[in-house]
Amino acid sequence: MIDTVPAAPVAAARPGFARLPVFLVAGVTGALMLLASRNYGYFFDEAYFVVAGRDHGALGYFDQPPLIPFLAGASDALFPGSLPALRLPATAAATAGVVLTGLIARELGGRRVAQAVAALGMALSGTSQIAHYLATYSVDPFFWTAIVFLLVRWTRQRCDGVADDRLLLAAGVVTAVSLQTKFLVPALWVAVLVCALVFGPRELPRRPLLWLGAAVAAVATVPTLWWQAANGWPYLRMSDVVAREFPGAGPYLSQALLGAGLPLGVLLVVAGVVRLVGFRSPFRYLGVATLVLVVAFLVASGRPNYVYGLYALPLAAGAVWAQDLRWPTAAKWAGGAVVLVSIAQAAVVLPVYPVSVAQRLPAELPLGTLTARAVLDGERLLDPLRDAMAQTYRALPEEQRAHTAIMTDSYVFAAAFDLRAAEQGLPRAYSTHRGYFHFGAPPESADSVLFFGDEQPEVRRAFTGSVVLVPDFATLYTGRTESWGRLWPGMRSQ
Image (cartoon, rainbow, N blue to C red; front, side, top):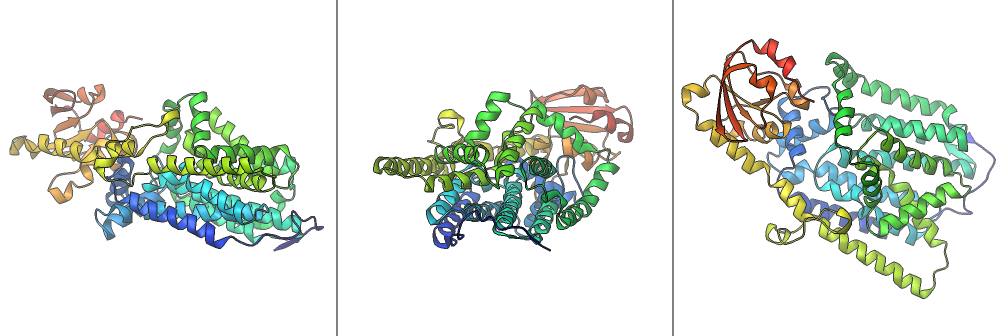
């Protein structure tokens, strides 16, 4: 459907697409992500996603829809143990997000330099830096960026006199995929539509293809919502989980801003928001929606990375604003210095170094930015943990192992163990923590439990005897008092 309105062009002629610089930035970003992907081991969430998708395939999970576990499980089945293959969806998402940011700048009237700077800003932002491993929060920002691009393009076309509503249908299809990754994207649409009603274009919520796209998204989400309903809506518990991790208003706001990238991204985002919100613009509703979402996530005690999907528009708007200024020579040199410092800062963060080099880096930069050293430390924890658990289990007498289940206080421990348990001839692990609770209880034949982690009163009361095998790590519980069918629901944690 084509919506024709009186012409009020944003620019006399839309600039051409800066293919070479934008694709160059995107290509370098993708290459660096692939290089980083081979280091240094599985992140604990990645281990959980692999186990969930490979061993416990379902239409939904406690803490997310099924797409990321499905991709992780499929990757492990096709390319067992390959970290670059596992992380390829995140690499592709980051690379495509860079291109889309350049295209958003073009739709806003940005010429070659503005498009390149916007793309570079996205490449140096936290949105790209977290894409060296597979997670919901490393893939979903791409879908938000794609939705924003489609809305920006539709708005620009409307101002030029002809708006193609098929872009709104496409945004609905992208939303459908996003809803298979995280359940967060409806917040974007609520903010966008409310702000469109307040600031215009007020006809946006009345476009039929917009609601056809919404119907596509709703139908696509029915299976995972059915799973949630059948399992007591466990995802509702995630709000409490996230709230417990909330760092406070100050740290949330600072991390949300610094995630845009120092110093280039921060400068572009601040300038872009001011430009979008503070000046009459057909894109004003999207700028205000961005601020509304930042505040909404703050009020809801959300995670700072929730805003990573919002960076593309202000980055692009800031780059376009900068191109329209008359820069004296000194300011141009200062701008070049900002770009170089930003690249240097990102270079220290990205885990592309050999282990020997990464170990010599500081864990943090000023203002709390984590470096490749922190990534190294986080991704090299699972193997020693799994080895210690396996060694403790194998140390049990064979007759004891025959009726002893492995149980942990955390999904992290359980996933670390299960990741390679089968190929090492070990049984699977059980846990009542978060998503692992829905993976089921031990068999009734297991009247004992080798428990790893902090003591849990609910577990302790379910057995008549206990022996600490490794202080603060492993305890053997014996003499189960009731069936697992009666015990398991009361053991659930988080």
